[in-house]
Length: 327
Image (cartoon, rainbow, N blue to C red; front, side, top):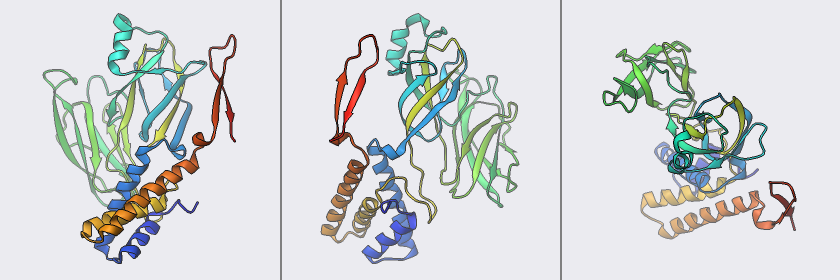
């Protein structure tokens, strides 16, 4: 557990090593720590970041799309309820070419494709509506910014994208409508000012649907959407496994989710030396040491490099059984 360090621990280590404990340097160190943390997390299939939704996501009959949790970075697989066959991933061209003229007809869902990241977690209100924003966790007013499609449905020649700023009420849970009173037909982005403690909600005035929620540490939110082929002919729950997107480090006592604290410290030290334009040898050493520490942490967390997989054919069974031998 020694590698699971807090933001303050990592900042203090970097500051002590480079000999600069000023508040200005602390801000730069925090930026470097978050940059390298995000980079390390995105590179590998860390077992610590594997997440699952065991039949918690429900797809309605005839629904074309599935919206996933906002922390999804990479989808591993999708398994429909009461099925022994995983949905097969495909790019969007493959998906429609394979389906042909049945792409819109309900049937057995056999494959899926990425269908974009959205600032909403549900299909938008069909006839358009006004939008409002609220927060919890603050006792002072704050600002939010929303961009979306007005003037017509997305894709229509009459539609255009516009943005609006809204001053969010200091009273928790009080929704403030966007100032222009425009009818929106979709949401492109939803973002707030620097945010370390508040939850922001974006809601439709007519439908009262909460389309998005921004959590502490985030300035925006995105929900990944998948297109099913074909739209299922019956309502079903699906099991989804994915890689989690790590959260930004904003609190001194916030701990990282991967055992790479010393790797991040070394990379941040290298960045600080580069910023200071000195200690080139030290910068190179800490940069390479950080890379090596991250690789060793990953190798210690997984077992694929230390096992042998043997495929064993099973007569009358469509699946493939694996025997794992850990030497």
